View 1: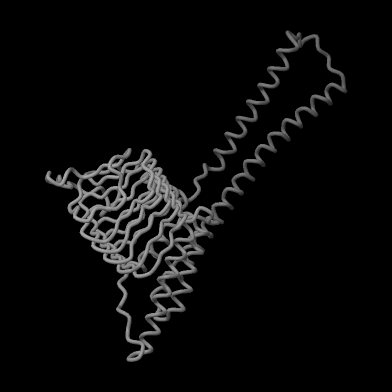
View 2 (view 1 turned 90 degrees about the vertical axis):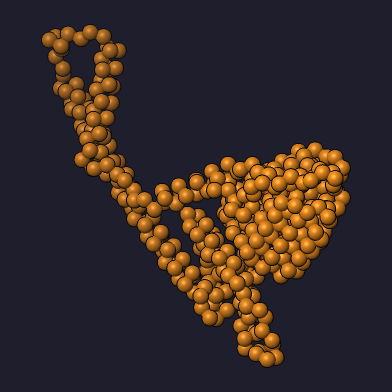
Amino acid sequence: MRLPSLPSASRARRTTRWRRRRAGRPVRLMPVSLALAIALVLAASAAVGLIALALSQLGAVNLASVRPTTTEVLEIVKIALAVVAGVGGVVALVVAYRKQRISEAGESREQAKLFNERFATAAGRLGDDSPAVRLASVHALAALADDWEGGRQMCVDVLCACLRMPSAPEPDAVADPAAHTSWRGMREVRLTIWRLIAAHLKADASIPWHGADLDFTGVTIDHTVNFAGAVLPSGVVRFSGAKFLGGLIRFDQAEFSGGSVLFGGAEFSGGGVYFYSARFCGGMVGFDRARFSGGTVGFGGAEFSAGVVGFGGAEFSGGAVEFGGAKFCGGTVRFDAVADWSHPPADLPANAPGLVLPPSPAAPLPDPGPLSGADTGPP
């Protein structure tokens, strides 16, 4: 089964990369001589045009019979001086504009330099042996992501990389109290990263990270991560190959309107993922070849009005997948290419708009075919 691609997410990522490239480019200005020449030509053209318009309103004038008085000569001189002053004003405006642009370019370079220095300092301290130093660097990176829109994805990538790093088993508190204290400190660093990311996905986040890609590939979840009320209008959230050993990922009342959440090859042997009362109005949630041998995935009260939730090649050999009270009103939920249907989800209606169930047990299940993008995600 191949699920539809996500053009909106792809466009968002291309736009972000374009803005980053633009932010790093120096301001290009034409040579000052050329700018002044263009300004003078435009000013002269405007003056000639105004004079021609005035003469056209006066009609034909016999210049041989015109004998200007002293007062009229002085008025002509005043007009000429006003024209010269106007041209000088145009030149001054051009010069002032160039100075302003050059000043802004200098400020932009200084700001980019400051952001890069902050990033290098915060990222470098993530490798410190002290959990307290690492915790401070995590908060510094999150603050930098708030301030630096062009480098936000880079900061988020580093935070996600910290979560993907393998953690050692919990040492015995009695046999090695120092190692146990250090392990607890590092665990607190990881929990803080989860909390900061979740807080920035909320609908009411002061500075949201809604368009950022989040790569949690291969993470081990043994605690609760609260994404309840998250908004995913774009970006890709990957839990491919994640192991749920007792922890929970909560997407209660979250809104999926264009982004993707991918659980390709994830293993649910404990804990689970909850989408209670979530709204699926676009985007994709993919469980391709996920293994449900324990734990719970709950869609109770969820509303499927658009988008796709796919289970291609998934194995339902245990655990609990629940759809109690779910509303199928336009979105697509596909079970037609599952690999194991021995413990099917509970509370699925026999027939509902957008719900695609496997064929009858007597018929062989179709080959799931290529993944829907759960392992690799959209390009």
